[in-house]
Length: 131
Image (cartoon, rainbow, N blue to C red):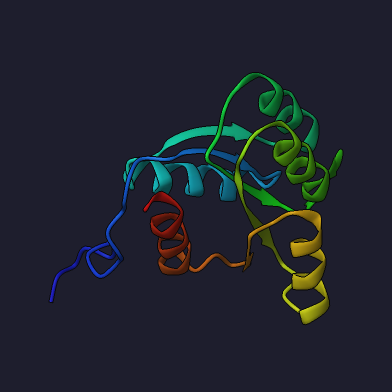
């Protein structure tokens, strides 16, 4: 058995351009390092306003966003991103009740991940998007 925690994860598919929106610094850094390790091109935003500015100036394949942000919401970010470009949305939230999942789908998110993030599930989603 290997000591590499990523060994049992699904294949990575193609490299994706991912905007990660998260106001918790440690979570943002861990996600960035992990996604970079998976071979993706990462842009980071620590709030809704900086994410909205990035959506206007760059193209992304995926927006991975926290829902509750201090200066707005992930719902605003994904709605604007989808108006601007064809992008897949992954909600990243501490709320995982049926109503929360329904609301994130209605807002435009294609996937809903509850915190703490299951990295195997995240990688599976990204492999699906990248295939």
